[in-house]
Image (cartoon, rainbow, N blue to C red; front, side):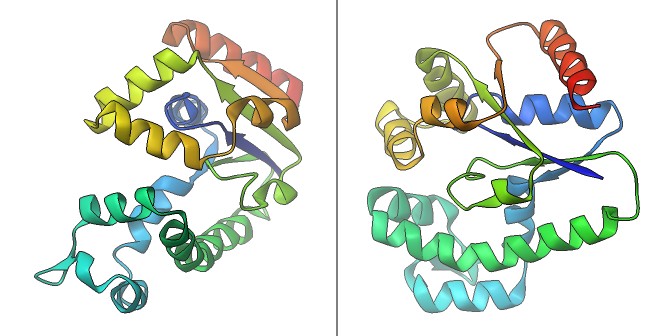
Length: 192
């Protein structure tokens, strides 16, 4: 089994490329979807409540308030990342163990692939990129956030230019879905 990372800054097209590979029949470990599962884990919620008690309203996490807190304060963001990381890594290792007896490719879709050192698991890393203005418009529309909120998130992530430089394959996603699917097929040929 080969493990291939897919990374890139917020709004650059990781999920779209991952979905294309998934639709072609490949396994994808989606870090964002896995984090959503973690927010349903009782043990995680207890730990989260001890660190960020004010984000709980009627025993539910107010994710908007949590986002405001962590994207306005680097120390708070690191606390949250340190809490999430062991849970996320366990899900990832479980997926690797599940796939280890199979042939083929497991893709990891993770915005923080390099920041968290997950690239050490990868045979190759694909970085998606797009013009920064398109990126900003995508995120603001998708997440219904302001330009200020976009830049708070944007500046907390590793520069996408650096990610592209240290990746094995770079994919520009400023294209039609059909063109991106063709790019994905070419990547698969390279990987095989």
